View 1: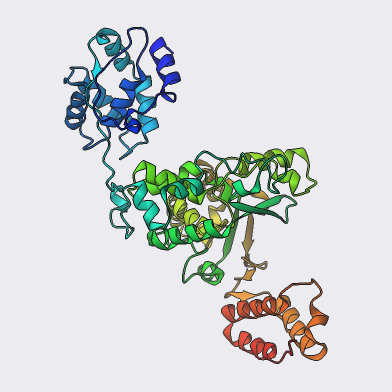
View 2 (view 1 turned 90 degrees about the vertical axis):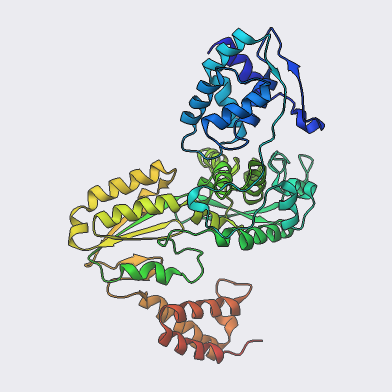
Length: 483
């Protein structure tokens, strides 16, 4: 790394933004001792401020510097080559590119006494979606103020709830002890034990943030298409639609993704909103509203007795900004972010004559003789695709089920047709009969606080899978005498 690279990169984040001081036109001679980061900031504003062609970039940079320097054309070409797959890179990415560019460094060394920033250009805040997102029916939000108005907030409230500075994760305490103030946190935390013995953190937003997230879901996320293979948390879909395509198949491969929601980092969520066409400032705030970084000490304050290795893994997952499990927006964003991996896995399945569906972190592949023959190689390729897309396969839950054994998917049996486990049905039927004979209190052995709603939900589940049997259970449920 040469002196130009080192000094410029070290100075960028400390460079004040002159536009924040209300000035729009500057003429600043550059320091003869070191690269002036203001030059990089000015160029980083000019380059993405319009049409991304080489000629247009040279024209804007020439306006910024007061002259079309000969070295601007090769600089623009190198920029296009570096960002050929990005319609609108982040400003920090442009700054890093300029700081690394040796040609710009040589130009500065040669012309440092003649260079000056003559005109600050501001990148336009219009919607610029990628071509595949141009048809999405989402609202145009071209400024932070417009986003605040859409969410019925002031700009300061919007920035507070987005928490891009991570104040909530630095608050230090959930309970408002001497180590911190719970009012700085927008989430409540609780843990759920997994069957594997590890823990899952549920991050439930407080009422005001939850209302904001519901508006984002209704106004934006519900209008972004997802892959047809996704069935979890999708209107009109259920575990029944997830399992039905695999009924009666010769062989079934089931895979499970580990730590599904926290595996989506905040930058990945912000990238979704940028893909939709929102300016960087708007996309960052939307991403902040939909992600969270949990305070590092919550595991101690929850009173959990888990070994150090599990705590280390939990800190790695939950202390960085991530997609929290427990918010209205997380399921939709997870499905949107999974579009690429769904497309790749669906293409892989079709190449083997197989069918693919996904319900959140549960993946199912099924097929006949041709799929059975290539199943070992298929499983390896599928795991490789998932790893490349940033997911981890829980290999302990990977199952290959043929017709000779009971084929399970999401608690349903799919050997011949989709059905529930007969033992579960008989057990629920017996509970309903006993509730009628002995009263519902006698059957609430697990002390459900809302036992009536719990039973109603189980009956509704049977009705969804098997309407005729569900109707019989519904009649029994209606005969129970509730106090």
